[in-house]
Image (tube, rainbow, N blue to C red; front, side, top):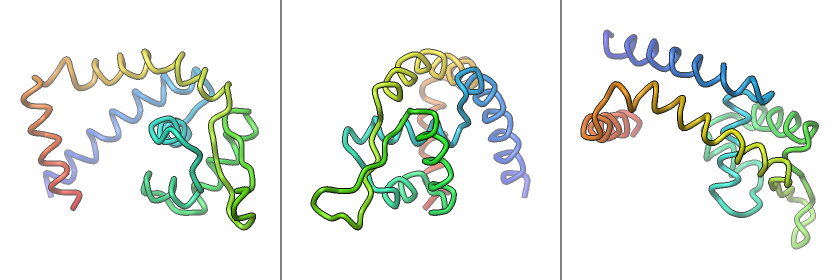
Length: 134
């Protein structure tokens, strides 16, 4: 029980710090994760891929995409090879916000984790968390 509560509190603290910075760019952590997932993939993705990649419900990904599209950061188009599918891609504005925010994101993560754990401790923690996530 203690491990779970510690994980929960730590996650809450880290998310709060990140969302404080993301809010300056009119983003939530969920929206940011969608942008980063699209950039990391290097290609257009279907909403179900994003949903699976980010471990969120289809309804949640739909709401995230809607808000990002309204903000001009992503674009949704029909797949030209299969008109029943929608493809999601970053817009130039989406790429730009990632470029502007990335240094702030890294600094926030570094202040939260990098300044408190050695590289070896970070690797150990990552290994343990992956083990729990299986």
